Amino acid sequence: MSRPRAADHAIKRQAILNRAAELFADRGYAGTSMAEIAEACGTSKALLYHYYDSKEELLSDLLQVHFEKLEAAVAAADRGGLAPPERLKALVRGLLDAYAGADALHKVQINDLARLPLTRQEALKAYERRLVARFSGAIADINPRLARKRAVLVPVTMSLFGMINWSYLWFREGGAMSRAEYADLVAQMTIDGVVRMGRESIPRKARALVG
Image (cartoon, rainbow, N blue to C red; front, side, top):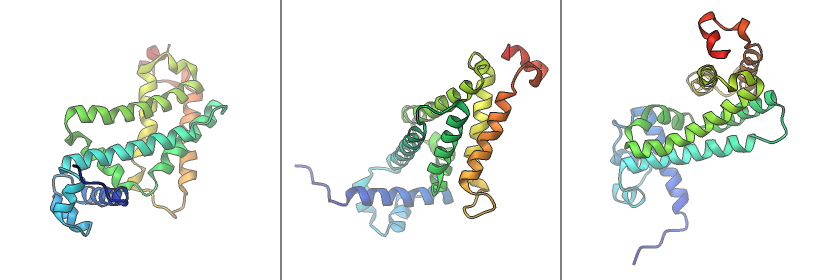
């Protein structure tokens, strides 16, 4: 008969994930042992294995929970009835809000997803693809010309993600610009560029891609 779970199982599991994310971000996944995670959590290695059979399973669950939160936050921000530019602003705010307090998780996502087995990577990357597709659709709604030309739409979308995803390297809460202000700045820069993206505003070599 299986052992019943304690009432605080989910709370302790989340605490393990939080500490593991901090250690992976600071020392690297390869440089962190299960014994070190257990010590950081103030528990025994044996008890840690009660929650996770392996470091790989822990990493997989950590990223799963992270992606689920990101997807839920962006979906909640994607309210119906918004004009295309306002929709994009809402999506950027939603994603940046979800990144608040999650710098370690974000760093682990960027650095260590590739350490998981390919089948598990594929399942987690499906979250990334859905996020990209949602933002890509919002950008295409601003300038329908781009909807027909993925060769331009994809670089535009990924450039937006570049401004969002790498902000953890320099952005600090309480600085000269708030998180919401930075979200609006990033969104507006993208909107302004996309709105003006006609043949005359695109480098000659790329004009054939836009039509």
